[in-house]
Every structure is written in structure tokens, then in C-alpha cells.
Image (tube, rainbow, N blue to C red; front, side, top):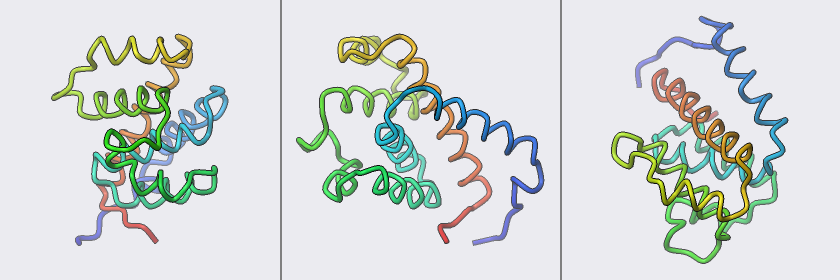
Amino acid sequence: MNKRIEWAKASPKAFQAMCGLEKALGESGLDHSLLELIRLRASQLNGCAYCVNMHTNDARKAGETEARLQTVVVWEETTFFTPRERAVLAWVESLTLLSIRHAPQHQYEALLEQGFSEADVANITLAIATINAWNRFGVGFAMLPA
């Protein structure tokens, strides 16, 4: 693979801005394990090897089981995920594949039906938007897992 720039060094303000989004997510009250599932699934969809590796490891540290980590890519075909997690994973896929899925109303409503507050839904959406941005840096600059 061709070597590309180290974007965080080339634009430290961009990196700081991304870190600011992560700080907001860390203070959002969302469960760390749920955030890692969001990050992992979006990264899988976007084909970001660096982020898939990092968020698989981070999810494991947050208490995720091997069975769930191995099957998040096919979450709809398993019984390992709760209805709340399934609602979030569906939202992740729709917002990550936005041009194809267009954020259906029933998926938005499913989040509320699963007991997520409006603030939670906004923060879940921020988590999805943020990991999609990180993925674009990772894929765009050919970042590889260490």
C-alpha cells in the first residue's frame, strides 16, 4: 500500500477537533460497551482496518464477549444482542450507509421505543457521525493496525 500523510501531524487542529467530539461522547452517559459496538460496526461497514482492530480490542476491554465480537458483523442473524442494541445497530447501518438507507422513520422510532431519551438518540447519532469521520481519516490515509 502506498504511504500517505500522517494526518494528525499534518493538521493537529483537525485531530484536536475530533478528540473534542470523543470527549463529548465520553461525557454523554452512553454505555462504553455500546459506544464500542457503534464504532466497530460502522468501521466494519466502512472497511477501516485500523478502526476495526482498535475497536474490537477496546470492546473486549469494555467487557464484550468473543461471541458478540465475532458476530457483530452479522448481528441480525444472532440472538446475542438485546433489542436496545439491535435498534442502535440498525441506526448505525442506516446512518453509515446514508445514501442507500436514508435513516428510516421506523428505526428512529425504535430507538425511542427502546427507552433511549432524545439526548441519548442525539448522542448515539453523534457517535455514529464521529466514527464515520474517523473512518474517513483511517481509510483515506491508509492507516493500518499496528
